[in-house]
Length: 433
Image (cartoon, rainbow, N blue to C red; front, top):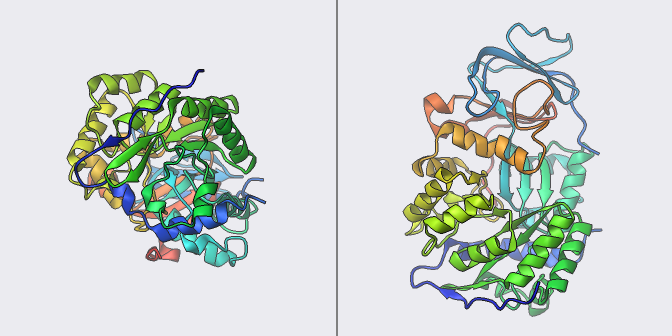
């Protein structure tokens, strides 16, 4: 494809998007380590059973009352009433519990300073950090959309070796930024460090970055197709560079996520073939019904991250855009930007999604079946049915009766039959650092 000149940087006269307010200390911790480079599956537990629970096999499915879920060798072996339990099965006390498939968070980061010593931290300390950030909210699978590849890689290896209980982790390693257009909230980083962040100047360079990221353990590619270079200025990535990165990623069999920010960034994402918007656009001016239809026609997926924008003046506009997208058939994934956002409480995300007009089944699909389908694991994940992975998120109340706040009332998070979080045992999550 021939070179396409970049559109002029867009400006907006109002308050800068909330993205600029990310914790620069955490960014520094990520970047200082990331450019140094990256130097089995977690074992299933013994039989585990949840008894006398309400079970939602999938979004929209009729719940099973007074049901038992039995996990054997990491897989769901039985779901229903009158299930015979092995003598040595661990039975989780779960009066009035509600069982759903394990939740996904499709937008997280491991960039806080506490992750810097991930290779040497005691397993118990590391497991508590994972609980506080992720598993206390029921997440059994997460997507890291940009962190130090050594940190995420080492954390993932320690989890998969069984040293600590934690979620499945997919990662982007380092994002690709537009040339000479790093976000301005990175301005205080040393110049040599800033220059080392991937800012490909040509399609060939973009392909090389993608290949290097994949060699360091990446499972997805992340592009900043709209980078906030000043509080009121967003610089889009050149479309030919984005297209090259997307094409190489797709050739290698991985999805491409985009931080688009505004109309120009969304345009680049669409024209280059990006699969997922890592956030709803922070500035929705000019994104009209025709563009929403184009997003749907191109099967674009959106991660709303509404909590991130919940104090912005235009949050109602963002919610309106999201509802339009949902009604147009655009698939949505649940994600919170946890890790950059150091408030780990996800209840506001559920509240914002409800305010946008999404129902309980819509939100449950965002948490379970939609990400499973996107990552092509829906043949064995995303539902509570016999044969699927033994990943469960168990709530203390039914969101259909108690409201969407019940999605945050997590009693247990279970992955492969191993309990990652037990509210009675592990207590409330600690505050983020």
